[in-house]
Structures are given as structure tokens and as C-alpha cells.
Length: 465
Image 1: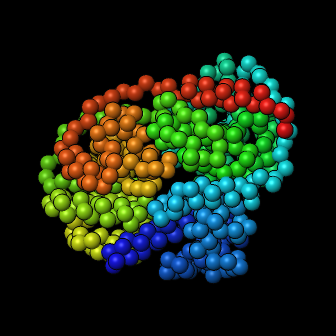
Image 2: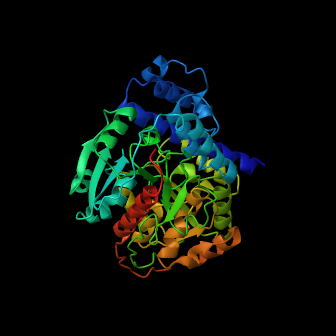
Image 3: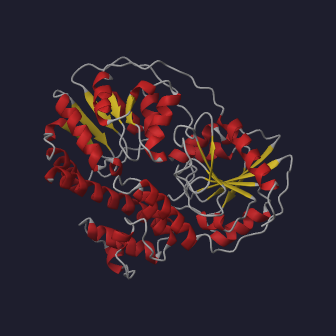
């Protein structure tokens, strides 16, 4: 019981720390946002962190927002924080999958479905206008994943429009600009954004955020385009009537059970398969590791990784994640593993690193360990691209199957474990394994274009809204 309590204590702190990051991101965009100020103040208190001037001047919201953002069924009248609760619930292994889907549907009924919608007469233009909506088009996983997609679209058949809420543009942003009609929309509220998209005549509108922070789901709820689809940034259901479909793949979503929308499965995967790199195996004691967010270290994940260290007594565990630079979070991490018999000297804990530099950590790691129930996505791709094998546990919900999808499409299905015992066996056997180098052929843009035409064809057979 004590061991589980220590792991739950770390996981609760990590979820609140993730929420604090969201609140601070919101305040960078809107420094005087009273809801974000109150949310941040409640989280600082819950994490026992010092209150600064901003936290002291934040007014109360009439509800404990530090608790509300951990409850996917919370009805607090603040749609962005309710969205954050849905996102944070994806990390919780104790929430039943069916209830998680229902929580998304309830969010839609409260916050999206009642909004007035634009009316459209379905058409079938030869040259489709595609609109992508995101605040993450830069040095962010979503921005990097689109580098091989946006520039590759067939400009003879598709006009590409981008509605970007990103404030700090960088080299990735500049590369994504090429060949697109780029609209900076951070100053537009949801209603104005929806009107702008409608006026631009977009045929298919693509959500790249889902319930992650800075999403524009209320704009999608107004149906500014005849066909609307969610892709890449979330990987789970959205839960609102105005979202026609979710783009996934056969490995992440073998059934439709976890979605309220139609599911369109991309043959090459929601996350494009990475380039595999072969490297010379390390020497010395085995090092297992993870660069996933600390919030992904669920209690069952910690328990299983502790079992692995027990079975491979000479091994160490390397963890690098934002939050581990904080002494109080390091202490909770050490306590969580100590409760399962793992001595502190067997842990190597590092905080966040600048973008790009974090990849150097893979030189220290023999085998990357995938967490659950929220598996790695870009992190798994980065490990494989660094020559490090990744061992994953097959899960049920789509976000639990991200690594399974990447590994299966990379010819590494033998690293996908069906149960905990297999996971331990595969991890121990993968030490010293060298991956075979590959050079995947990029096809995702063509598959997306086929999906967009499929959506338009389906809408053409429907009645005007």
C-alpha cells in the first residue's frame, strides 16, 4: 500500500505541474486573464510552491481550480480549463476508457454543441481549400511533424491555408510558411476566427490541437467549414457534434469504440514512421531510460520499471523531464521508486534541456522504456531516430497505442509487449540491440489529401446545414 501511495503522490504532483505549465502558457498570451491567474494561484498552493506577486493578486474563481482541472467531468463554466481536464485525464490509468469518452461527449454537449453554426451548401470543387488551425506551428512536436506534410501538398489540386495562433515564430514556422496562405490569428476570438475561415471559403478545416492548451475548438463548434477533422495534436476523441472525423491509423484505433466521430485511418500512420539509425551498442552497465513527460509516469509504470531494475540488478534508470530540476519533484520521484526498493543511486534524474540538446541524452541509454496509459509519440520516434530500441506495452485507448503504432510500422513489432511480464523480458533482451537503419518514404501528404476528398464527398451527399 505504501509503495502505491508514494507513486500516486508523484503522479498527482506531476499532473498538477503539467497543469501549471498550461496556466503559465496561457498567461504568456493573456497576462491579465483572471481565470488563468486564479488557476495558477490554486496550483501553486496545491504544489506547495512559493506564491509570487501575480499569485497573490489573483482573485478566487469560486471553485478549487487545482482540483477541478483533474476531474474530466468538472462543470465549472470555463471551457479551456475543462478541456485541460480532459487532456490531463488521458494520463490517468484509473479512469475507465468508456467514461473518458463520455467525459469528452459531455464537454461537447455543454461547451460546443449549443453554439450557433454557419450554414453550408455542399459543393465539389476540383481544387480544394484546406485550412490548418494551430498555435503550435514552430519548435513544437506538432510543428516538426508537419515539416514533411505541408510543403508536400499537391498545389495543383489543393490550396493550403494556415490559421496560426503562434506568437513566437522560429525557423520551423518559416519553413512551414512555404507555399501556404498564412493567417496570423492570435488576436481573433473564436467567433471572429470562425467568420474569417467561412469567408475564406475553406472546404476542409483541420484541427491540430484537440483538447490541448490554446485549442480553437469553440471556433470549430461554429462549423465554419463544410467538413471538419481532427488530426495529429491530440489523438483521441473530441466529443463535439461539429467535428466530422478524427484521423488516426489501424494500430492506434483498431475499432471506433473510443471515438464519438467517424475514424479515418491513414495507412502509413497518424505519426509518420521515423528514420531508424543504427549505432554501436554502449559498454558498461545497462541503462534504461525515458525522456517522456514526468506526468506519464503513472503508478503502474513506476511499479513495472522498479520490477525491471530488480530483475536486472546492475542496471540504472535515466529520466529526463521538465520538472525534475525542482528539488521537491526530484524528492517525490526518489520516494516513489524507493517505495518499490529502488535505491536513489540507481536513478539518474535530469530536468528539461533546450530543444535539440535533449537528444544527446540518448547516448546514455541502452533501451528506452515506454510509459502507459499515455504512451510516447514524438519521444518514441526520437529514440528510434537516435538508434535506441523502445519497449512498449500494448494498451487499449488510442493514446496508449501510439508507440505500438510507431514500432509496428518500423518493423519492430517484437518490442511490443502484450503484458507486463513480456515487457520485462523484452526490455532486458533489448540491451545491446542495434537497430537496422531505414529511410522511410514520405507518403502522408498523399494519404491526407485522399482523406480530405473522402470527407468532401461524404458532405456532398448530405443536406445543407
